[in-house]
Amino acid sequence: MCPRTGTRAAVLGYEDDAQASRYGWMRNTALREATARLMERFDVRPRDATLPSASFSGGNQQKLVLARELSRGPRVLLVGQPTRGVDIGAIEFIYGQLRALRDAGCALLLVSSELDEILALADRVLVMHAGRIVGERPIDECTEAQLGLMMAGEALA
Amino acid sequence: MSGAAALPRWADLWLLPLFNLGLALAAAGVVVAAVGQDPGQVLAVLLHGAFGSARGFSYTLYYATTFIFTGLAVAVAFHGGLFNIGGEGQAVLGGLGTALVALWGASFMPAWLLLPLMACGGALFGMAWAAVPGWLQAWRGSHVVITTIMFNFLASTLLVWLLVEHLKPAGSMAPESAPFGAAAQLPGLHQALGWLGIEWPASPLNLSLLLALAAAAGVYLLLWRLRAGYRLRAVGSSPGAAAYAGIDPKRQVLLAMAISGALAGLVGMNEIAGVQHKLLLEYVGGAGFTGIAVALMGRNHPAGIVLASLLFGALYQGGAEVAFEVSGFSRDMVVLLQGFIVLFSGAMAYVAAPVLARMLRSGAAHG
Image (cartoon, rainbow over all chains, first blue to last red; front, side, top):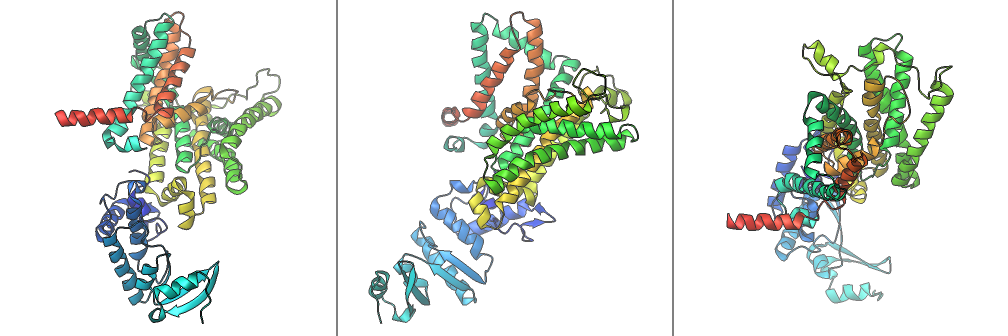
């Protein structure tokens, strides 16, 4: 098996899990099948779990990493620029997954430079300027213009 | 890598290496013709010398045994993202460890207990010798390529000092240890086959061939089946991603070098326990460096390394026959052929890939 396959990438950091290994042995067949299912669910293309992960496009690599993290039902998730390089259809899917995680009680810290993404996903927004948090707003009080001003360092009451 | 990706898997694994080997043979043939020899005759003598008789084939396998150990050593380090140039020194230390256990235990231990202990001694000494550069790289940032090269020189001078000052029997002039007792002599394959009632001509080939094949299987299981190997290869592929995933790259570097050194250390079982039956100088004879070529040629996979070891063993044995049979042909010509193989299979391994891919595609379109 090729050393850097999508299957291998999809288990990185979770190789101790019971689904991934037992008594120190990797469960390669089970892993390949689980990765194939994840690829189906997250629409990773091409759907080939044996392909080296470096051969996927950036967006599909991103989906692979998100699939790895989101599928495990985390209780806390730090996620930065989750949709960078991902195609539009997949963006909606990823948003849906993140919202479902929130609804299931997962604490989500999202970092993004896309205002649309923040307005679409966040419940509470912290704005940073020059390395400092300069303001906090609940989502109903946020507008694009206001967030933009805060990002530029404009102090708002 | 992009050229390799365009090739189907079977072509990448079989066609390309064979094609590269063919190129190396052709280039060597041109040189042989240029010095006034008949390349066909040389190749025929080489092949006959290496495979044409039970005795010749035994020598081929004997050389191959050492190359399997050193090739596997290079491959394990490679999968951990390290280039271990120190197989030579680690093999020297492995022979030392094997010999020390043999000299200590031969008088009171039975062979069935002593021989495994000698293998452990060789592996442990090789392991320790490789772990120091591994530790220096992981915790002190000294590049393992530089330190392992330096450790080769340290190993050979250490061996000279130990032999001359401590291990040489009193009154002897040669820098050699006392010969081992009978219990410390690993049986030759002809002896082992003789116990089974099979006639086989005497040769240096010994039971460490089986140890080498077991080591190849073990390396395969470690790297592709065990979680420990998954971590090791994860660090080799991307130390940053591995560290992010909670794998400590430093420990993996140390582990990869230790296993690598242990494999190189097992050379002592073939050369010292199996053939020489005493510790002496220069018994590794460059096999540590040949292991790099073997690992390159074998694509750092145990099965490939066994096949590449067979090839290099055949070159050594067949080359010796050629040097003997063909006047004006020195053994250096075999070194030349090895050089071509390293050049075409290692440095230029993927140069022919786009051409082959195009030929396969047009072949498929017409067929």
